[in-house]
Length: 185
Picture 1 (spheres, rainbow, N blue to C red):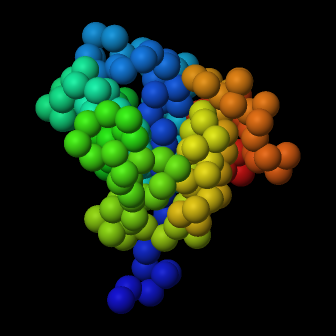
Picture 2: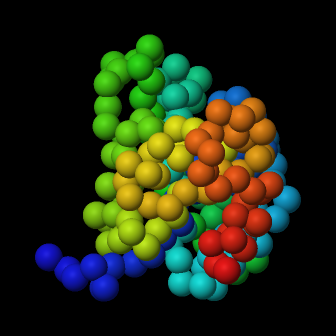
């Protein structure tokens, strides 16, 4: 087993509402809209030796609105867009399940469960205690805390509404770029 000091620090990012403007069941590149500063935030993380890992619930697959190939194509497109700014995402993990739709209704990957986190940690050798979760929902914060990361909630996407019910000690900032600035300070 590798020593904790050899493991890598990461920032886990929710996708919809954190990196891109929240649009229900987004799967087409033509509908993608970056949240202002998101590319700069990802580049800052890259430049400061953080792995960047997207963890996203994608229940549109269970609802048969789109498929795995659609999600992969969108993520490839996102990576190509980031590459134009010399930025990148080290891993994309998503949960295709939903408790009310599809063949699998009880999984370990749908946030607030931590299956996507543990898979990423195994694949990329991540140390949770040196890592962060940034997202716009309480389930993102719950998943991050359950995995053992620090958490930051953003007020983009569902964040404005969700922050009202966040715990009083939850760090809340306006957007992803501000979250990255806080965690780097």
